[in-house]
Image (cartoon, rainbow, N blue to C red):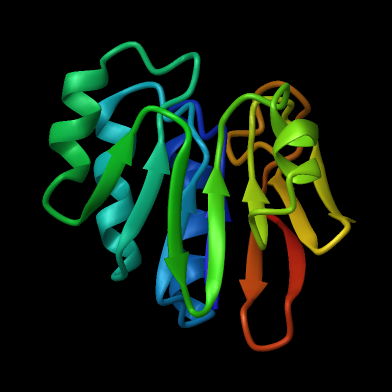
Length: 160
C-alpha cells in the first residue's frame, strides 16, 4: 500500500491522523504532493515508518528547512519528481496545470498532484491521476488523504 497526502498546511492534528492511517494500512511508501508549509510539519512524516517521496508546493517558503527536515528519512525536491516503485512509474507534481499535458504523453502509470484541495481519482488512457485533496482541511473544511494499492491499481480517498 502507498499513502498519498498533499496540502497539509501545518495542520498537525490532521497530519497525525493521516500518518496513523498510513501506518494502519501498512504502507511501504508515503507520497506528499506539496504545501507542507513549515519544517515542523514535514518532520511528522517520519512517524509513518516508511520512506517518503515529496515535492515542494507553492506555499512551501522555507525550502532549505523542509529539505533538512525530510533528508533523514526521505526525499523532497522541486516538482516534478519521477521515480519507479512496485512496477509503476510515478510523476509527482504540486500544481494542477501540467497534469493534462503530462497524462497525454502516456509516459507515466500514476500522476499525483495537489494544489486544488479537491480529491480526484480518474484515468487518462493508461495513466491513473490522483489528487488526495487537502490533508490540512483549512480551505474546504474537509481533510483527506489517499491509499493506493499497487496490487489492484485501486485508490481510496480517506476522509480524515
